[in-house]
Length: 253
Image 1: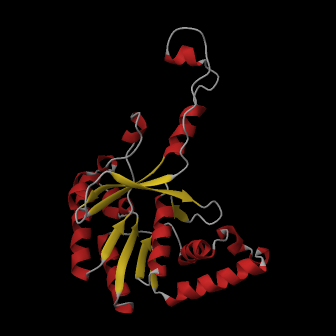
Image 2: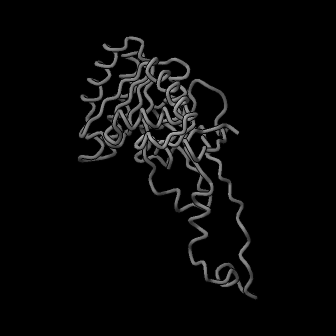
Image 3: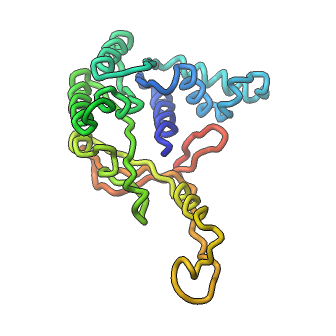
């Protein structure tokens, strides 16, 4: 839920700070990532990049400056229709050759590697998780691997995800230096309120006279919850963001 938006925000911030970044993905093209990152830098709708005539002069000026910043800081993007661990390491080698100061590589996402989708997923994820840790040390980079959740959060009253909610989470929990979960309260509140909308509250939740169902507090903020931080302080703290509806830029509250 929202992991790609978070990744684009992180890439945008990396580039604003001058880091060289790599992205390995089967889901997005270089142009898509460039448009999304530049959209956040310029605070203009990404949809306008397909119809440049719709830009106002002020938006065009901001986009021009954002593209200059985007081009000045190095980014390498590997698009692939199929991907395994060997392909991923080869992509890192090529990126390091082109950009020796490469600092961060994003993998979108861990569960699309062929080792995870063929045969025993648990064994595949264990192999991937351990290899990513080795590759990060070998090439002196940070690897940020996006990952999917299982469905356990849907079964709980408290929907905030834990590290154990990652698909085949055991090895990921052990190998990762940091685990950051994405959570948005109103994603689940809206979902719950849509169910059985016409059924009286008393009939669903207890005996007695039918009454109006109490309103749930909708928190529209996106929270990044740190569930593991090997090199940092205490866990279980979170940072709250609002996501700008125009550019999908995350603004800390």
